[in-house]
Image 1 (spheres, rainbow, N blue to C red):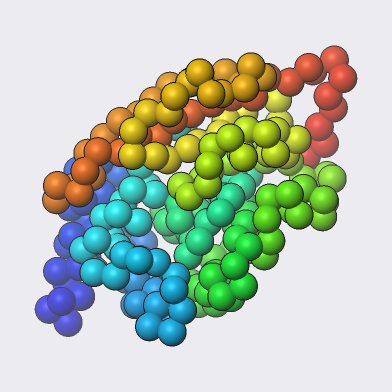
Image 2 (spheres, rainbow, N blue to C red):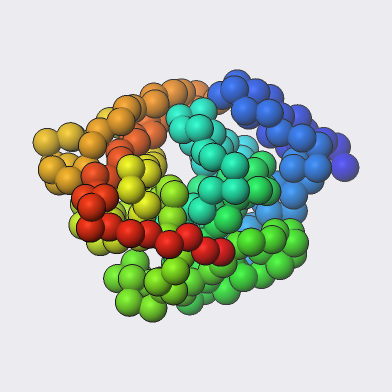
Length: 227
């Protein structure tokens, strides 16, 4: 119990340090998430980060920083590409339960964990797709588009060139990295919105969240919405 209390305090203090508030009910979900991540990681390679503090700061808190970088709209549809063990999608969903979240992960074992943890935490309006973004593009329901996409793991060029058809006009791609992206490599049909640079708590280093919006020809682009 003493360790659990210390981890909960670390969650609250670290989130507060980056300007994000975590409610007690959210902290309990994060602790369940951490416990199961460690259990599954003993059999499957879900993450190379295994120490409690590092999981909390480098995965959970880092994921939540998007809430400071971008004003995510109420009930927004978010597509998390290459989510791995659920980052940043599940931490964002825990703190913002109003979001509609779709998690894309090609690895079978990681996808199995995602299905399990979504069920365990009773997260509503979360879909898991096992496969690549290209396969998702082919199989997705045409009536569903997304307000934001996120990625912490993939090469941004893959996102820029394959995900534009999943987005509504003028919405944003949120890309996590260790340093600002080289904007000369960004395709002309994407607008740079801004960089949000911050320091992870407990001296875990600098991080940048780069935001881009996709330009769409509205005269020829009609996007239905659906859930």
